[in-house]
Length: 259
Image (cartoon, rainbow, N blue to C red; front, top):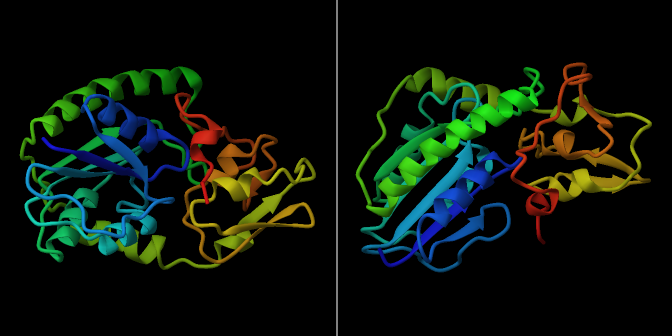
């Protein structure tokens, strides 16, 4: 294998943690944030590997990931792989990556999923520290196995599964629901530190009069809620009193988007 690039998207750390572990097992590989750097030239080629590591959002790809792959210029004969981290289910997420690559004359050579602690506190209370530790230990074993597969360019193509339901959740509910910005609330605990704006992967938050103001391009990643040091941000009435989850192997500085 000549060279491996691992592109990742991560809001609360799971996918960055996974990307780091994959990269650590492949000599000479590099990890690149999809939210920060976009290659202008064609990449890949024979004996080269390009991977995408990202969380499952509403049973599919995050919008940022989909847009990134759509616009990426990948050379023919590239070994493409995708690793989806998830807390609940992933349905046809990996199949949709394969479908997208096929529009570019490519295909997904290797597809894998890794269950990790769920962070989506707008729907549920994230797991306890004890549960998080147990889940991450199990994920390490899965990641070690798939890293070896990727290193050896094993072929493991995804199956198209639950396509209609997966598309409904991802295209209708996730991308179809607007005006999320009206549901964010900030308590008087807010210090105006600006961390929420710094971790937003799509630059959707601005600090005005020492308070965060959300635009209408929310990625639905909950990074702003999860990384707030004062727990001052809530979404509607759904997140108040719930735990905030950040992968313990990832620090705030690793998530802050570099401009």
